[in-house]
Image (cartoon, rainbow, N blue to C red; front, side, top):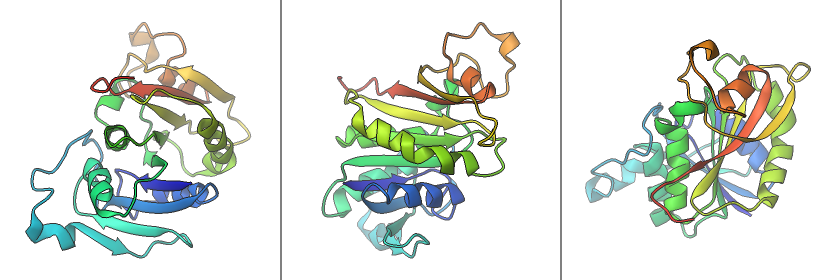
Length: 227
């Protein structure tokens, strides 16, 4: 299996290293990530993306601290990463993993997320995608390290419509205190840090699951694509 790993926090961020390390257990991994912080860019594209005078500086091969993983730094957005990889690398992957984002991508915030945006662009390119995020308050990746392999293995077996991505969010809890995994979660109707008491949230809402100590797994739909 060929896997591209992208993110919006930048190629030097710890989360993408963790994700690439675990992705490498499932196939051949190539990292394509922004050279710097690009959070909140949604599916933004650079207007000069294909400027021939900038091609060498825009998509550069760089060292990466995971053995056997090839990596490219992109002077652009998370969406740029997927587009440039699709036209530059010799073949497309079987799947794109996006993350691991610093901060949950749940509720209404999926509209603004560069992590989700890169995953949506993967769908545009005809590539399935999974987005991974970790709650803001988390102080490490212990729970991710414990659970992510099993989650990846399970999601790779599941069928999903071509206009949907899997959206996986990890709570801030340590491995000995988290409650388990809640499947089929849907976006909460409240914004980040708005108390649950201020909204009538939907059943199996992703933010509620995270606040209660569950890993939340659901889907997000690209409305521009047919299922």
